[in-house]
Every structure is written in structure tokens, then in C-alpha cells.
Length: 352
Image 1 (cartoon, rainbow, N blue to C red):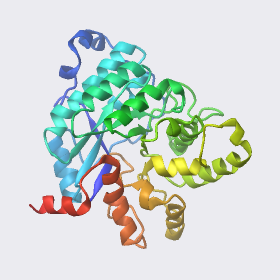
Image 2 (spheres, rainbow, N blue to C red):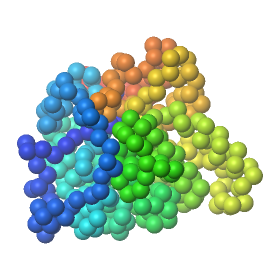
Image 3 (cartoon, rainbow, N blue to C red):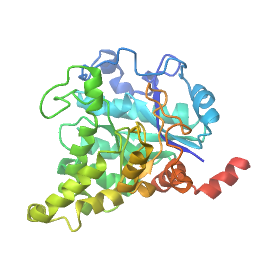
């Protein structure tokens, strides 16, 4: 039983997104008014695996779901998750709607194992709320999705209506990296010089957003909110929790709305996906980091299919990983997060 929380799917000539763009906005998109700034860092080898080409749902099933035994796969549609960076606000909202309807028509209707992500324009919270309630009503849309690059850190009160809608619809709020550097430098002290340097610094995004969500009291305001940090690694979390808890002891008067230690909010409300798994020379060090972040409830498996740093479930973890913990990561944590059937129930359904 495996739930993959990060499968990338793309519009292409075989599955174009143009028919799903609201008619009033098609000319604007055709005139390239849906352009967005780029971060300027290109992988010289490309970001997708060279040994396969997955253009359609049938390709993803044949090349990924079936051979790896993926029970459910959560889609991360590109460019849907980065529509917040589009300058033209109405075009951005239209592209979010198109990405959601494209997923539903092409993937969710093709195979019950596909689960969708509601793409939203964070720059227009009112429109984002409307889209969450519209597209999120589909029973196999399981989360709200945006990119890591943002005008404000995600604890900013401007985004409160979005989190309220997430709670109302029972949908986690997911963040995916890859656009860092599009609006400002991807680091707080200067711009990286190349892709390798840029890619190594991506966890900075999550540390900043997570610290903001805690410090601004987002989880106090929205006790039902769940946050999923996709494709950002995991080993950075423990030191951040230690630092926040230490500072909270002396600075709690500056955040009087917090009723618990920062780590308590994070461990209760936040989940991380495994890929890219850090790979220390001694596998015991990886298990120690899992213990520090309570991986038995915070860590969810992902492959990042079909990207270059793709992880298979058979090679993503050291052999000394306890079987019970492995099962929690591969299936149970994600099933609880997304409200999916329990392992036993799913096993019976698969057999039938």
C-alpha cells in the first residue's frame, strides 16, 4: 500500500489546457498576458527523467502507478501551482481554474487512483476562496496547492480567508518549491550563481514560511488547518523546531497569541513529503533525524515522478528502517492527512 504525494503532470499537445481556459480570458492568454517571471536557474540536463516520457494519464499509469504499486497518487499540476506569479490578476485566476478543470477531466476521470490539487492564485485571496469552494467540491480533489515564491510569508493575515476556506472544505494547504527567485532573491542575502547552488537552498523557503505560520498565530486562528510541505527535504526541521522553542521561552511576550511551544503546532498541523530524501553516509543518522521530527506522524512518501531526482519506494529508505515506520510513511500518514481509506480497507478493495 503506497500513497505518492508528488506526481507532476503537464499540459501538452495531446492534453492541451487551452480548452479549459474560461472563454473570456482565452484571447488574453493567447496574447501571452499570462506570463510570469522566472527564477533564471536552469538544470542543464533538464528536470525530467530521460528514460521515459509521460504525456497522458495512461503513460503515468503504465510507467509509474502499476509498476511501483502506487495505490493513490496526488497530482502536482504544472504550471497550475505557480499561477500566483502571473502579473495579470484575472488571467492568473483563469489559469488556476483551467488547471483544476484540466486535472479533473483528464486525470481524475481516467483512473480512481489519481487525486487532484486545487490550484489557487494567492495574490487574489477572494478569488482563491471561490476557486477552493468550486473545484474543491470534487470528491477527489484532496488539497489546495501553491508555489513557495510569494509576496508575503504565508502567515500573513492577507491569506487568512484562504485558510478559512481550506478548513471549511476539509482540504490541507500544500506548498511546492521550484519558483524561488522569481520575485526576489531565493536567499535573503543574495542571489545564487547557478542551478546547483539554487537547488541546494530551497529548504530556506519552508523554514521562512513555517516560521511565519507559527509566529503569526495561523494555527491558533485555524485549529483545523493542515499544511503539507512538498519536496523540501526533512532534515532541516528538527533544528528549526529547537530554535523556535528556545526563543519562545524568552520572547513569548512578543507572540502572546501562542498558547503552546512552536514545535507543538508544527508537529500537530504540518506534514512533509520524503522526496528528496537526504542521504547521509551513515543510514543511522537519517533514522535519527526521522525520530527527531516524529516521522511516524509527520512524514509522507513521495516520488517526484517524473523528475530527475525521482525516488522509488524500494530505494528511498535505508534497509534498517523499521517496518512499522515504513508503513506509516508509505501509506498511513497520507491516508489520515487526506481522509483516504485505511490500509486494511484499501487492501480489500485492491484485491476485489
